Image (cartoon, rainbow, N blue to C red):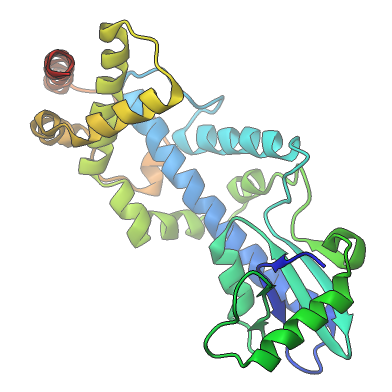
Length: 296
């Protein structure tokens, strides 16, 4: 048996594996839709800002910021599924032993694991032999977990010993289905989500624009070739550069609070005064960055 069985759970006594899958599937799908809406909205706001400020667009085709973001996410999803190590949005191995059902979860989204563990009767059942068990388990209970997983898996990988359920297969186009759906309330909810609203408030969006431009100027002006670690170090310097803070405050009015209607329509053209503010901000960013290079 593998010595480390992470993200493993035991279902409530008397639970039928197939009935459990049928019960958890719609709950997980609803959470994936919510996460897709959040990702789409965050990218759509970025597209909006790129178009307003005249930056080179990183997103693909799409008439509106929301559609452009949708197609970008769809392209990313396609690339993920070409990776042989990609396990999907949520995959769960299921096995039965002595009348109880055991599952092992594969996902990078803690939100989906939380959906599973919030179901009554689902309990943590992980095991690893490189450490003692949790304080709330006796030695006998910890050893029991070892015996169960030894019986379920032996020395073979879970994929050979468990029945696997995958929530959404490759190329499912879920973000596109969400975009073409008639209920756009998920986009509204995403814009009003506290974590999302903090990321897309005017000050943070202005900070993203200012620091990205400062980073670009730095690499062009320094004339240096950077390793990956050097690149990350410079990102850290830009984030800490207090000389950029007044510029962020100055340019923030160009990044207004947005609604779903803003993301599904034409991006407004800056007024002459706004264009002048943008040009002034660019000049100040260049000056601040060049000064920073001289100090290094």
